[in-house]
Length: 135
Image (cartoon, rainbow, N blue to C red; front, side, top):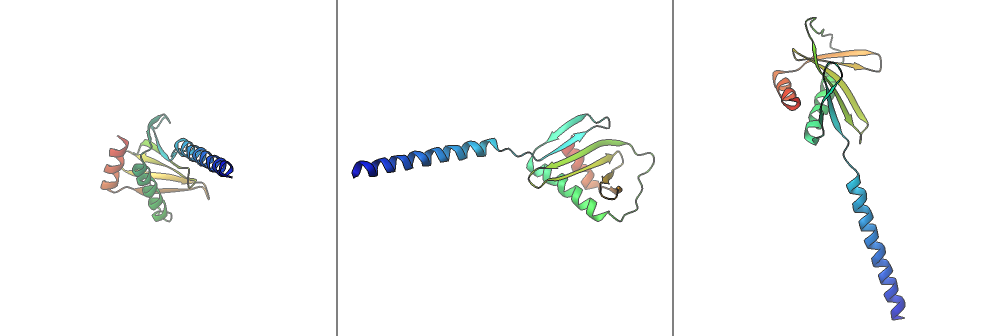
């Protein structure tokens, strides 16, 4: 009777250890794929941002600006030149967004639904923080 009980305990213990090791390996292989990709005007990747706080900054900035400027009829000055194309990818939530950043602080994003172009101008603080994060 004792040997059957001992075998049961040993098998249970080994199964528990194997389960813990498996869960540890799975969690180590699961990586955070959220990122912000910064491209130059020629579509060459110049920076990849994976820092969670910086990704959240760009995501929040983009989301707020899009939401606040949907009905805005702002135009980008003709002398404006794109300095960066910013692509936000958040895999856990399937949120993605893209916007162009111009040399004078203007930004624009093409909304796929309705083919609408949303334009906004960043505040001095937003522009400074964005440029510091990129550079």
